[in-house]
Length: 124
Figure (tube, rainbow, N blue to C red):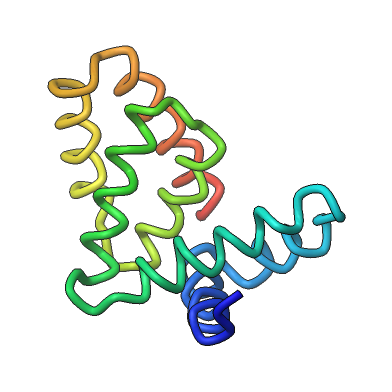
């Protein structure tokens, strides 16, 4: 494991998803899935999210589109909340999800709008 990437990834992951969520994920990890938590933290959050070439807001919008098309509702909800933390507005999130409807399919967008509304309500 690359400690520099892992530490950077842990910091960014907590900033975007919330420290409570990340700490809960690690606390629930066992010998079976802990390697996945470490991999995600090191590579997704440290090696990629840790790059300076794209701002976090842009990365969040890209994630929302991809996660919507992949139909990953749990991940979408947490990333909608993270997108708000990264400076995305509800209007910008709506526009991303409209783009999903055109390029990823209306059913994906319908589910994504529903999930985004749930996330917004939970954040109020």
